Each structure stands twice: as C-alpha cells, then as structure tokens.
Image (cartoon, rainbow over all chains, first blue to last red):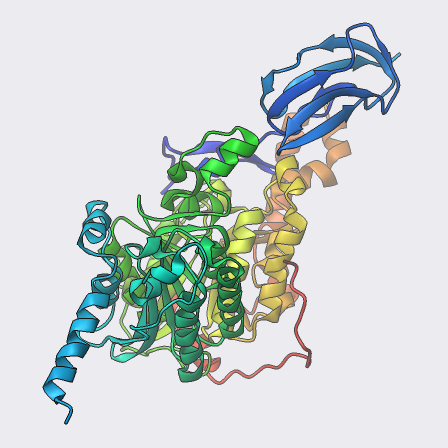
Length: 108
Length: 515
C-alpha cells in the first residue's frame, strides 16, 4: 500500500524528499537570515526618543546613534561599525516593531 | 445544658454559608462561561459520595487594605480527600467565585496540607486551578504560599502522580505548580496560562494579543507542550483524568492495575500498515493498535511535537509506555520539542516502574538553523540521558529507518536496551542511502559521464549492502529479526522475561540531566 495523499508534502532531508505533514509550529518558525554588517535593527518593539545622527555623517564604532525606548528603558543604540550613515529610517516619536531597520551604516 | 440539636443546626448553617462560595451571582457568572463550581468539579471527578472536605472554616489573617473586614469562604479553595476507582485521592480546587480564587497564605496552606497528606498516604494528588493569581493584599505572604506548593511538588515528584487541571485562569507564579506536576489537563476556551498577561505585554512591548492566543488551551496543547491532555469540556476532561488513572500506578512502590489480557481488536493488518518505500508516510499509531491489548492506546501530548508519539497501553494486561517515531509528521524526525516530550515521558515511566516499548522509524534529526540555535544538542541529549538512566524493561522494535544519531538515541542496545528486535524492512545505517552515496561516492559520481545514472547505481549499491538489519544483527546490536506478524508475541515474551528485571545505577545524590 503506497500511501500518497494530498495532505502530505515533500520534506527535504539529507537523503532526499520524504512525504509527510508539517506542524503549525514548524510552519511558523522564524527563518534565519544572515545579519548584514552596518544594519542597525530594533532588538525590541519600542519608541524612538531621539536621533543623534543624520545621513552622510561619519560615525565611529560605539558612537551613539539614537535613544530607543523599550521595556520602559532608554536604550543607547550605538554604531556597530565605523562608516558613513547611509540612511536614517526613524525620527523622534516613531513607534517601531521588532527587527525594524533603523539606521544603515556603510563601511568606508 | 447544651442543646445538641441547636449545635448541629449551627454547624449546618455555617457549612451551608461557606459552601455557597462567593454567592449566587458569582456562581451564575462562573456557569455562564461553561465552568462548574469548585465543589461541583470535585464531586464529578471523584467516586460518588466519596469526598470529605477539610479546612472548610480556614480564614485568612490579612490585616491591610481593609482585608480585616473581609471574609472569604474557605479562603477561596476547596480541599480534601476522596476516591477514584475506590482508591484514595487527595484533591483541591480553587474557587474562582471567592475573591477570584486568589491565593493567599492560608489558601496555600490548605493546598499544602492535602499535598503533604498525599505524599504520606502515597496516593495521587489532583489540583484544579482556577485563580486570578496571588492575592496582592496579602503581599509576600501569597508569594510564600506559592513557594511552599512548588517545594512539595518537587518532593512528591517521582513518588506519587501529580495531576493539574487548568479550569480557568492560571497566571504568573501560579503556572509553575502545574509545570512541576506530571500531567496537565486543559479545556478549550476555559484554560488560560501565562507568566505575563496580555496587558503587561501590551504596555511593555506594544504587542497586542488576546488571552486565548497568548496562553489558551490550544496554544499549550499544540505550541508550548505545557499541556498533556486537551478536552472540549470539563466533563470530557474529567473522563480523561479517570482514563489516565486507569493506566498509571498510585505511587512509585506499587504496580499499576493489572487487567485481563486481550488480543488487539483492530482490523488493521500489521503487514499492510507500513509502506515499503522508506520515504512514504503512515500513522505509527496503527502499529501500536496492532500490538497493544484490545488495541487500546491513550496518547499523551498528541497535539504537540506530533513527530513522536507517546502514551499508555497494555500488554498481557499490564501497563506499558509506548514510544514511537511518527513518519506522518515531519517525517518522524527528532527535534527540540520531540526530544523534550519523549525524555520526560521516559522519566515518568521509569519513576513509576512502567516498562517501555519503543517503535523506531526515523531518518535522523531535523536540520535547520532554527533548530541548532534553539539548542537541539542539549535537547536531543535528554533522550540519550533518559533512556540510559531508565532501569525499567526497555524493548525496541526497529520497523524501518534507524539512521545515524537517531538510531543510537531511540533506545539502542548501546544505551542499555534489554531487547532490540528488527523487522526485515529495517534499515540500520549511519545515514540514509542517498546521503551516504553522495558522501562515499561523491568523487565517482561527479566525474562520471552520466552523474545521475552513476548516482543511482551507487545508491542502489549502498541500499543492497547497508539498508537492512543484517549488518547490525551481525554485530549483535539486534537480538532477532522478526516477522511483523510476530511482533506482539515477541514483545509479550520479552516482557515476560523482563518481569523480574533488576538493574542498579552507581550510587549518587542525583544525576545531571541536560535540562
């Protein structure tokens, strides 16, 4: 009895495709993506209190970029690398979700 | 002279007042959402007329915030003893109609009193949770109360079965008592469990989520794995509790109830259940039905990590813990969740002397960054630890695939299995044929004129040589290669031989399982 049912999908393992069902949790898992150097993402949802840099600024690694309020705390967000600020996608007062791209820094 | 009848009348009046809990209006509100009252729940769960209540007249001693002027009937919890199947049970039920079932110190002490009793009398303890949380007005006294419950949950762990029924909200610190117990029961639309509620999450993180989506019954049955049994109504839930108690022993020194042996009642043919192509799915519970007495199987955590199946059945009338990879879901791989699920089940069965029968058909561990980063190494290690540590009879039947680390993990000879049997369809190998061929013959395949054809040839070569049970049998890793139709008979024999099994572990304070 070769059980080939429409509810089963192909599931890739090291030795080829298996016919199986997926779980809700498996489908909802967060897929990993490689972090991009110089991209400053919000680690939590929150509010932008103050932005300290503008496009074109030269920043050193560790320099304060903005204040991000999350978990009732003022978080100092600093530059991960040295470079030129390529874009600033937040302004003071913005409510942003988790993983929102706030600032992009282009390495020199 | 004291008039006895007057005194009896006084007692009856006092009792009736307290037994009304939070009053008629609160009771009606409770019932309007499909919930029973605390006393009704206990009475429907226990044998008829078996409940004896204690501490009916316990009062809180809160003095702040106007508490000194407030009386809470029974301090918001009903506690006592009774019987199920005529055997002793300690039980408590929080009464949501009384101050929202909030837990203060004396409320907690009523609970710990029956918990202490259960441990002494060596009988199961059942907790029915329906509480808004700590009674804030009592401050740290309430927190102390929770701590005293958790401590007893831990001391009783592995000695007496502990069951938690979540029949209402169970939030904050309150959730940890159920989490420490052996089996958690939830009811659709009624159970709510979380550490921080939707309001706090909204305030702090700005995430807007309903109680149901955050910690409703389905969430805990399907996503978190906190719940072991999911029911559509409270009555169904009580039936599940009684059914579970039919399978498990009353304590760790007493065997579970033995019933008369029955042949499997299923009409399924064990030789037809499993497709010959190792990549085709089937429902492994059909194999269990072909093996277990009366084809009766009580699945535990059926909705969560369904890529592994665990649960109770009987063989020769005695309770068995069945464990089986489920090829129908995620190809039956081991992953973080399924490893947690099976490891805890093995430890429950070992603690309560229930023999383990493992049915193996799995292609390995689930690949993926999310799994590796979620710690599949330390989660997977729990399976190895639990099987190795267990001293109950441990029998494995390899049905089809037993590849790589999965082969070792699923109660292999090497982890101390007492008996390992394989069907002729078993493939016991370091990995699946296609993956193996790519590695072993990678160069030849790449350099061939027709790589696809060469690949196919090499895969076939590998299948012929290694995708079978004979290589492992030649090393004595498999005790016997058996025909599928003989599976039940072989298991019954192995269980009979294992009946007096005695095995000891090195003396130690306790081991360090990877949790």
